Length: 131
Image (cartoon, rainbow, N blue to C red; front, side):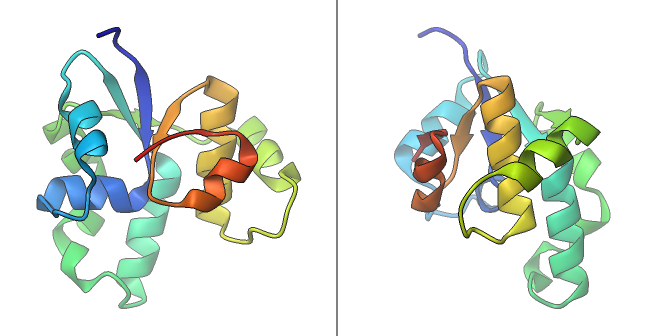
């Protein structure tokens, strides 16, 4: 198998950390392959911290307080958000309003990353979605 660069959607990252069975077999396999480069966006850190603060992710308290540590502990890499990423995300067509999803789509497209996500809406944007 040829190593690939993969971006995790926020739920995929959280489910991986929790060992949640909702993560598909294909997603598990690509994340578990140590030859692959697994990336977690700063947008996911923002989403986790925000949703935890709002009470929407009470189970993610430990992650919300040290997203970077959780990324490092898994051997994953952080993906920063740039001004160009912000421009791309803001210019994406369509009605999808979630700013976190729009950023992940923009980053995946710009960097030609596979995106591990159950969100079928991402398919409309031409993302190489893995699920």
